[in-house]
Length: 185
Image (tube, rainbow, N blue to C red; front, side):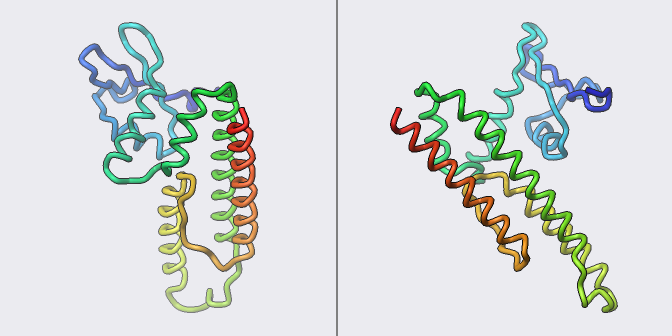
């Protein structure tokens, strides 16, 4: 790991305050969520014990968003996660979720790249460049919120939408197969 790719170290003091070692100031959960949304790796360490608390705080961020009515994860996914802790297949679930989110990130990146390279006959219209930049910024903002399984977004009339639908159908099929296997256990 290169020096610029080191995780941002956050120390939790006995008072439960979170201290950003990079900027030498205190941060909140919302600040940590912002770092994560900006693709910054964070590591939260208990100053006294040295325990890694990163997972605990990331789960707390998700729980707070859920409590505000922001449906991060559908109830059926949360239910399946709880069930996975009581089965012998629990080691499969984190790997499956990690692979699914990786596929989602790659799909989003590919979609944004394809949108930026699409030729358009309207490109010669005055003001079209500004309109296109606004549209891309809007799509980028919308795509940030598509991390939740089962969420739906606007359908795009492009060749990529068929590929995306096929990828989504494949993920849904894999999830259904996994749920079926878990049920049989």
